[in-house]
Image (cartoon, rainbow, N blue to C red):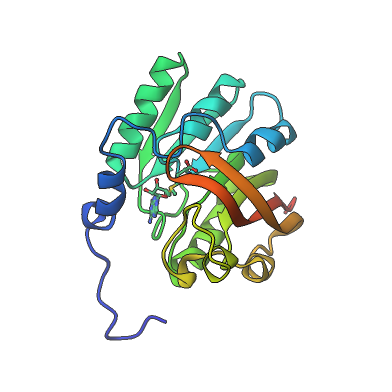
Amino acid sequence: MLDDTTPPPAPIAERSAFWDARFGSEVYTYGTRPNTFIAAEAHRFPDGADLLDIGCGEGRNAVWLAEQGFSVTAIDYAEAGLAKTRTLASEHGAEIETEHADLGYWMPTRQWDGAICTFVHLRMSERLRLFTAIQAALKPGALLIAEWFRPEQRTDGYTSGGPPTLDLMVKPRELRQHFIWGDILLCEPTDVTLNEGPFHQGPAATVRFIFRKGEV
Ligand SMILES: C[S@@+](CC[C@H](N)C(=O)[O-])C[C@H]1O[C@@H](n2cnc3c(N)ncnc32)[C@H](O)[C@@H]1O
């Protein structure tokens, strides 16, 4: 909870230092192929839709979506990830708009026809704020398709990746409580086997989520 003693946020470069370091090598941390849930569900987006990739990392999903004919804006606070996103896009002959922003404080200045988010793990206060921002970023009727680690990734001892502490994990219950401006089409704790580059390998506990923004 915020109170009078809560310090202001650190500068963005300090907050993103961990991810800039992780993305600093030529290796694509989570591979260059799209997340399987996004690849399986992207058919739900209208042809040629204008999509937002929230926390794009090194661009594996954004580039694949652009190759499917979508127009993609990819947001992240890690400059190293955005640079690799642009490199991957140009290697695939794809065009992507990148935006450098801290999702813990980001508010959209426009709306999109759809959005994706995979494995972006923020602290609770920032996460709930982001859930509001995502809903504001969707046009009426637009979909969010997302996958995150859920707390069982740590409590059940999985070693396939993910944040170190439970407070960074996404609980299905909080999604049901905070995605209120529309309909939740899927909110499913899922046991998956990840095969996404060197940092996401093996059995994992995730939550898969599809939300449709209401028409109001
Ligand atoms: C595990 S990676 C996932 C990247 C990508 N979505 C994927 O699945 O390949 C988490 C990403 O979230 C980004 N991220 C974490 N916190 C963020 C924040 N506060 N603002 C913007 N990006 C953030 C990191 O920079 C990193 O790119």
